[in-house]
Length: 313
Image (spheres, rainbow, N blue to C red):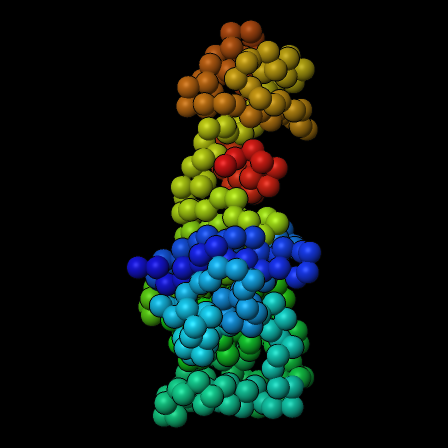
């Protein structure tokens, strides 16, 4: 079952098309990453899904409710963490009161509100700051509080725009762990905008790459990374024969690039399963002493750059 279904979704601002006939399905219980550079249309997509904007064309459904026909129902079942979410808190109200007020607005049973607030604030390291005005918190702590607010009513779908952008590495790791845990425990669906490749790779089980308002590639993270196996990078350390090793590598038709590094060469090989041993044998047969022949793990960054440049579709 798909929790978010996007059909031909388009948003224009005058002559600018920010979202261009988007087609995307987000399975229930998944952590879905929308990955792209600044200005790609990620934030506009989030604003459309949470009904802050109306589409120019097309539509989408969230949790079974159409964003045009049933915007109130969409808001009831979604948690939203916008890009500047730490500026949407009530600065004069305490950390605790911000969450209590929000919980009541969303109809969380009053008997459950204190327990949920303590659980989230404790996890985020904010329980000791529960009586402090939100406006006195640091930017990172306000970001944590905004995340607590988005999760308090345990929404079916959580829409997040750069959720860890203002967090230090330790806090960002906690947020990733929380998201993964909630998706498993409550079967919540997370739709996350990010330009952070490493974060998406660690957290999301599915991704879509967007640029200029259009989806260029989408699928399971593991499957998309597998596309990179058509070529693979290797680091080859040799004993005082860098120039000769470089010449040999460049003479091979299946080596698409070969560059010298400090004490090694870095090569990109087509069909590595068949050809990396061929290169190794050629180097050895010509007297090059190999100290190390190491495969470099394929990352989403490689795929992302290829897609944005038009190399993978």
